[in-house]
Length: 463
Image (cartoon, rainbow, N blue to C red; front, side, top):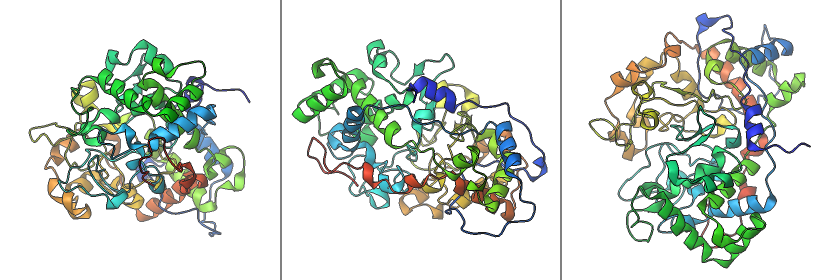
């Protein structure tokens, strides 16, 4: 099989045909995520079930394509990346790892609206912090990130319009470091949580905390010093990068390894939908075929398209804002989303379109996890303005209920025009969810096998 680089892989994954505004827009549906059920078993065929040929034609028209197989990853590099991803050595006070907020048990999320970062105890929904400090945004899933051009909710790690990797580090991510990054944005994903005080670095109690926030170079160098003090890590790095000495490596080598591990172990391209696109007519149930027709005919696939079901763009879909925010607005608790990256006023409250593969496994939903269930999030797109105005904070965990911001008018002023007039009947919601159940690869349902037995630091692993 021809070896693919991340560039050829991404090019194939993002191949999108011209969009077609199919008929039946009067039913108006645009949806972010989708199903909350496993594939139906032996359902009756609904009247008017579309033919497989018609559904494939609709998919081609909306640019919904199969996901390419992941590029080759050296086993030694994936092994190193797995160890680093699960090792708390990368956090300031050695109390949290990358996977503490991206747990295999919770489909690479943590099962809560907003994560609780360093200094806390426990995992997932049971993780607690006496001071009640939350991370500003929901922990996004890590599936298929090798096929994505924009990472994080605001796309701050991205392949920009000029075709080059863009990150918040600017020139601190040197040309030499960039050469190390083999898998595009995925290789840079670990460069930044390690420097965030709330997420991993902490404010006091360790040598990393004393480094100024703006000095990424020093933070990365200090982490490599820690890693290099562990002989097993030095050996693993030199095995993963043959011919290179550890003393000549930078944290780009560590981040690249973590990205390689995620690409290697969390790329899933064998869903019923993929098998259907490959020509197997019976890969979808009749109900899923009907749901596919709805999804591809209505507004859903105008934003959810391509190989990952994301247009790689940014939209305001009228999600309520709560939690600590990103320091925006008069309250300093607002989150202006993409505007924080671009500085463009019209990007205010815009967040990246959620990919839909395995989405039934990855709740809660929205940039701050405002909606717990898949059905609830699909329903949110029906008269989303009214849904935002009626948002009930009692559905949130107790510590977040008093943090809801009264900024609905500002959010609605920026709401995507595609959402205007969208009304989804319960029947359509059910059909869309039937379709989304065909977007889950069964291998993603149980990720226990990606957890290492131990990590070189000897620190405990959050499982």
